[in-house]
Image (cartoon, rainbow, N blue to C red):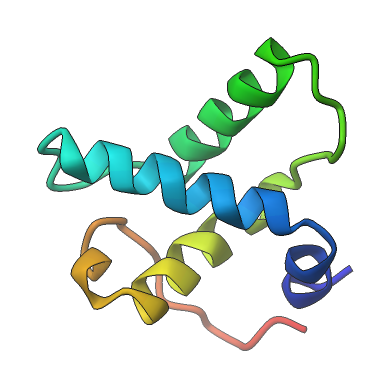
Length: 88
């Protein structure tokens, strides 16, 4: 499964990723971990007894890239490696 397929099939992950990233930024963090946000999503959904989706650890960096691409105020908020090739 590609990131695009996973993202399209799991809109709640994107919504929560944006929410927790905005909360971290709002609390004054200059940088934060995309993997850490995934762990917050896991906690949040488990604490509510939700088991609607499985988080794929392969895609946390893709969500960071997507957020920085769509919301320029997050550029530099996540440390990401340069992609050597486009994944598909």
